[in-house]
Image 1 (cartoon, one colour):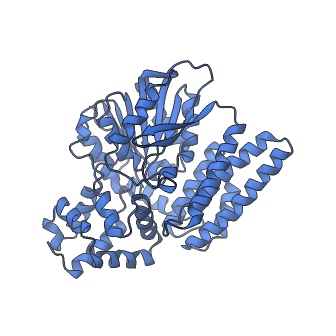
Image 2: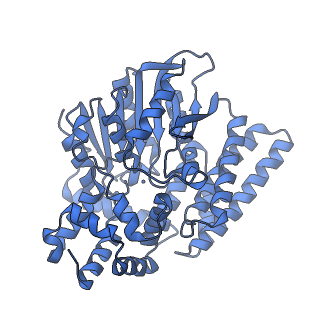
Image 3: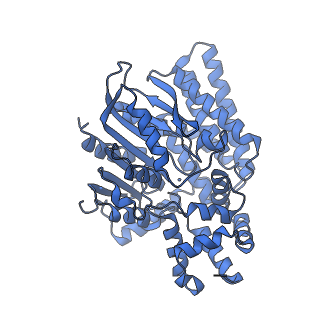
Length: 459
C-alpha cells in the first residue's frame, strides 16, 4: 500500500501520543476503583507530577529520580534544587545541572572516604550513581556523543565504589552470551554459599542494572539471592558493546538461567524472573521458552507493541481502518521519508516524543524513526504468552502514561493460561505511575508478597 501525505502525518501525530514502552487462572485482582475515582486519580496524578516541571517527560524523570530516596540512593533536597535550575524542556540544561550536582556529591564522598568516614562516603556514592545516570538520560540524540559513555562510566564507577563499602556480599559477574558476555551483579544474603531461591531482575527500554539495586536489596531482606543483568540494547551492552535490542529475548534469558544453574548457591528448583518496564514484555517472552523459571513478574505487563499502535491508528479511521499490523510494519521498513519528516517535526515540539524516538534509535542502533518503529513492532507476545507455565503476576498503574487504562497489561493477563494474577495499582496514594516509580513502599510490598507466596518464602 502507498499511504498519502495526509495519512502519513496522521500516523506520525498518533505515534507521538501512543507510548507503549512498558521501558497469573483466577479473575484479575485489581485495586477497587470506579470510573469517577479513576478520573480523579488521573487528574491528581497529572497535578502531582508537575512538581517543578510542567513538561510531562521532565516531570516523570524527576519523579523517577526522587523515587530513589526510598532506598537512600537520592535525596529530596538535592533533587529539587537541581531541578529548579533546569530550563524546562532543554536536554542540555538537564545534563549540565544534574552533572553539576553529581560532581559535588561525588567529591563530597571522596573527601569523606579520605577522612575515614566510610558510611558517609558509601551513601554519597550511591546518590552520585543515581544522579550521573539521570544526567545521561537525555543525551541519546547523538549516539556518538562521548558524554554518553563518559557519564555512564562515572555512574557505574560511583555505584561500584559504594558497593565496595557496603556490607552485602556481591560479585560482579560476566554471563556467557553468544560470542561475548553480558554484565551482571550477583547479590548474596550471606557468604555461606548455601543454596537459596534466586530472583533474576532485568530492566527495560531505557534502564541500567545499577538502578535495580533497591529491588535487589529488598530481595536480600526476604532471603533471596539476586542476579541482575543487562542484555542487548541495555546499559553497557549498547553503550560499549554496541549490541542493539532483539525481540527474541528467549535467546537472552536462556544463557542467564544457564549461568545461574551453574552456581552452587542457587536453589535450582526456585528461580524467579522479574522484568521491569519493557522488561514486562521481554521477561514473559523468556519465561515462555524456559520451564526452569518457577515464577514471573511482568512489571508492567506489555502484550504487543505493534498491536497497540495499530489499534490507535485504526481508531483514527481513514486509510488505517483496514490496515493490518503486517501492512504497517512492511511500510515502516521502507523507511518512508514523509513519515520520518513528520516524526522529526513532532520531536521538535514535544520532549516526550523527542526522547522516545531518540532513545529508540539509540538502543536499536538505527538512524531514522521509521527504522526504530519497524523493529519495535517485533516485540509481541501474540501466540507466545499462552506457553508460559509458571505462576505469573502482571502489574499496571491506573495513571501509567505508557499504558493508558492498563490495556496492554490486561491483554497479557487475558492470554495467560497459567496460575495468574493482575494488580492495577490505584493512584490514590501515588502508586498509579509507570512501574509505580515514586511509590516503592506500596510497589515492593505487593509484588514481593505475591512472589514470597509462590516461591515458598512466606515468613
